Amino acid sequence: MKKITAFGLAIVLAATAFAADPTEKVLKAFKSTFRDAQNVVWSDGTGQYTVKFTQQGVNTFVKYDEDGNFVSSRRYYTGNKLPVDIQCALKKKYADKTIYGVTEFTVGSDIAYFVKLEGEKDWTTVKVDGDRNMEVTEKYGKM
Image (tube, rainbow, N blue to C red; front, side, top):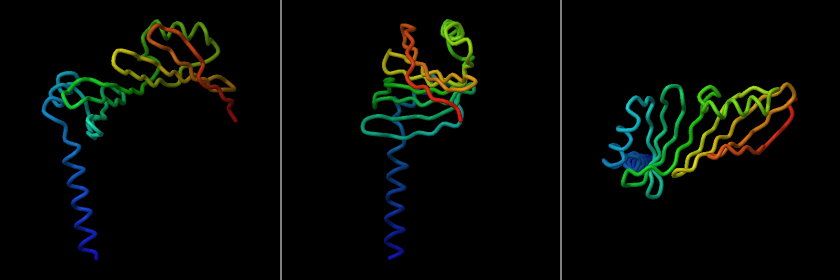
């Protein structure tokens, strides 16, 4: 029984490793855009490839279709990497809070920033869209 289980596990692992290999088009698109990416890890889904990596201190996930076309991205970083106009608007509107971190989502050409703000007594998440509209999406107190 152990041989069958080990053999089955080997097949699953081999299939997973093979399935995670991106196509040549996808690799070319990735390497031409993210030349200095580090800690690169690939995974695949139905008709898409996701690459996780770090670049200039930013943790990034990018999805490509099978032809190497950009589908979406998700990036995590500190507030000083936000566009300056957004930093200024947040500092003005939320003067009593500091920027703790940012999650940036891009789908096609649409972008949204979810900015986590820390106040003395609470946490607030503000969504900033590509047109710079701001909306509080969550707020909760500190214990």
